[in-house]
Image (cartoon, rainbow, N blue to C red; front, top):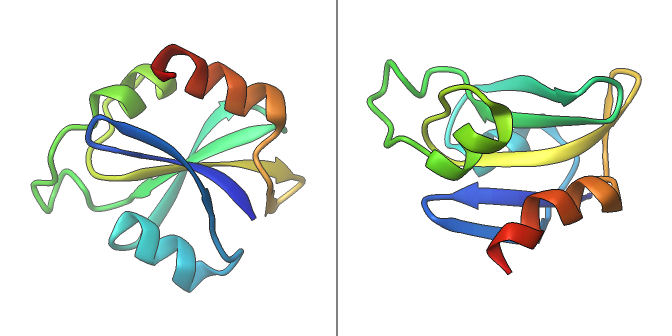
Length: 98
């Protein structure tokens, strides 16, 4: 699925398999979904990032309006399923960094 990965000061479009294992690999551990736009987009983050002492992610923190550490992946949602990131959400995240 099409997603946006935010790691350090890098924002990039990625293609990620829609599996638990692939999402865990993308954020280096157990996942937690942070709602960005209800029913439209979530940010997948490492559930144990703070406990593991992962580095702050200032861009993801700004996008989510909460403290985020470690790598983050933004995807769309359809009910309880993850989907491709909606184009308008992708634009809003990537435009400031183009």
